[in-house]
Structure formats: structure tokens, C-alpha cells
Length: 278
Ligand SMILES: [Zn+2]
Image (cartoon, rainbow, N blue to C red; front, side, top):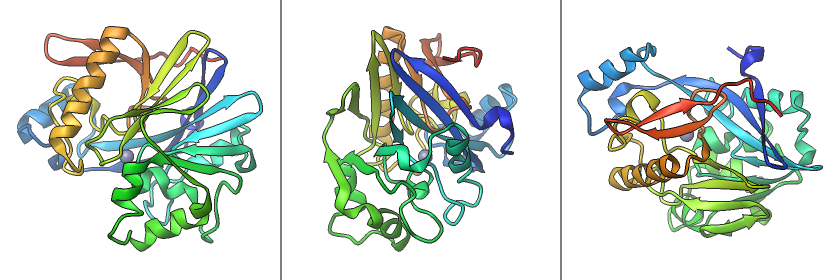
């Protein structure tokens, strides 16, 4: 599974180097697709020769500017999701040692995105990193009135004194938080801008590319607000198609970069050829 072609892939955005890091794949149920019949969902998957049940690839990203590197999400961990956690070795292979990571920007708090924040012994995987997330995500899933589940508390506790909560807008030079709620209450994407180029890393806007580009109204049963998730998806697809900017997502086919184009029915995904390296 963790073959060399899927380990990591670098792409330049202006003066930034963005590295997509493959973290693993989990089987999901097509029943999780809502607002579409199972027959139609299966037909769209089959048309693109996708496996049944569907496989959900998971990746996360590193952004390097000079000596400084940040992560956008941290992938999963084998003790939470047995098929995930491959990304840590790939980070090292890409020369992105854990000590170099100063910031981890989170799209949202699900195990396949934050599990990699801790090592199996419970210590911080990125000992020098500040953790940045939307205030609403923190309140809804971690710091609110309800106690978070133990596994989430264990993953975030080593960072407790270095969590920075943000709202939509600027968070880091050249990187802006884009509020895309619905999958979770405080789900955000991160827009990178450098030297006239830009990239939106949109988190979990899409789980099933063969279905959701064509039918943005299809949400997942694990979207906390399915209508809001669909509205965020519609909005970001329309903007990406209109502006022609590069996008990437955590559950798109590796290495996850591409463009959105309007189509007779909904939209279509145009993956970027992997030959484009820095
Ligand atoms: Zn996810």
C-alpha cells in the first residue's frame, strides 16, 4: 500500500513548496452518501471504475517557506484508524523532520486529521508546533460544555498550552482560513497565496469525487449539518470553477491537486498531472 509513488509529492505555489503526504486508505460504505439513491451512487462509482465498497484515501499537506515548515492537518494514527498513519515516515523521507514543524493548521477535528498529532506513547509528535484551529471547532468538539472523548483529549492535551483559535481570515503570512462549515461546525479550508499563485486546500469538502463533483448536493452521513455541507461545497466549487485556481483536498485521489470545471451536470474534477514538480 505504501508504495514509493504515493509517499509524497511536491508542488510549488509561488515561493512556497507544498508537499502532499499520503497517509493511507480506509474502506467506507456507500450508504454514507445521502441525497442520492444507492443505485445511482453505485452507477457513478462504477463508471469511473472505482472499487466497491469505496476506498477513502487520506492525505495531509506540508507547506515550506525557507527553513520554516507548517503542516495542514496531521493525518491519522494506527491506534485510532488502523490503515492510517503512513504519513509520518513520508514526512521524514521528504526531509520534514518533526522538529522543523512550527505550526499545524487544522481543517477540523476528526481522527483521520488529528490522530497523527501524537506518538503511540502519548507524547506530542511535533514537539515545537503550535496548533491552530477555528474557535467554533474547538468549542464544538473539544473545549465546549461536553467533555471530548478520551482519544481526542489524549491527542490534543500535549498541545494544550499552545492552541491558537482563529476566525476566518489571516492566520499566518500568505495563508488564510476559509470558513467552509457543514462537515463539522468549525470546518475550514486554507488558502495559500505566494508570488501571484494560489491554492485552496479545502479539507473534507469532497469524500466521493465520482459522485460529489457531479452532484454537490450529495453530503455524507457524517457531515454534522448536511445542508450546510452541501452549501459550502456548491459555493467553493462555483468559486473554483469561476476563478480557475488550483485546489486540493484531503480525500481526493493522491496527489490531490487539480481544478474544478463547470459541467452540463454539476461540476467535474480535473486532476493535475503529477509531472509538475518544483
Ligand atoms: Zn476526513
